[in-house]
Length: 218
Image (tube, rainbow, N blue to C red; front, side, top):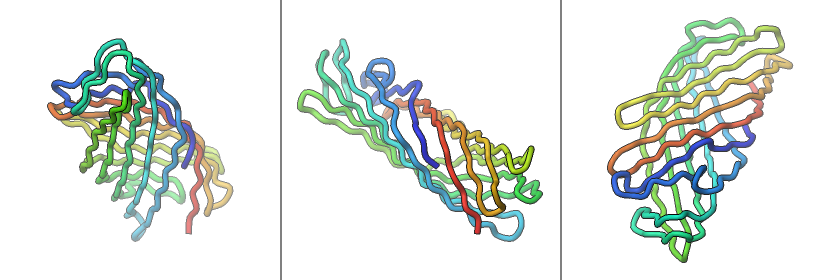
C-alpha cells in the first residue's frame, strides 16, 4: 500500500507539563509526504489468521514562531527558523477470527499488538533536539470485506483503542477490484488519529492518507 499522507493537526509539547505547545500544522508549514505499508497474512484452518504489518511514516514542517519555544532541553528564541521532523513507525502483530466467511467476503474481529517508534525533532539556530518514544499499544481489530458487485468490493479495516492516558485509531476504507481470486487492487482513504497527554509528553495528531494498494494470494 502506498500513496500520500498529510496532517490536519499535529500538536506537540515536550515535556508535556512544561514544554511549549506548538502545532506542526498551524504554527509551522507542514508538508505532505509519500508513505508505504507492507503486510503479510497467514490463515490457519478456515477462520483463524495472523497479520504482520510494517508501517513507517515521516512528515516534515518548517517555519518561524513569534515566541520562544522550550523543547526537550533547549529553548529556541522567537524568530528562529525551525525544521521539524515527525516520525511514527508502526510494527503490528494481529490475530483475527472470521465470524462470517463466504469466499472472499469476510467479517473478522481480533486484537493487535502494536510497537510504536515515535520521534519528533526540532532543528534551528545551531541547536537540534529530538524526543523519541518506543512503546507497546494493544488495539482492537476489525476487518470487513464485501464484494457488493463482483469483481468490485468494499474493504474496511480498523485498529483502535482508547484509555485515560491516550488513544489511537487507524481506520481504512477502500474500493477493491478482484480481477482474479489470487489478485486484488484497492484505492481509498485511511486516517490515523491519536496521541498521549502526560507529564512527559503531549502529542496529538490526525493524519490523512490517499492510498492505492495491491494484494497477492497464494
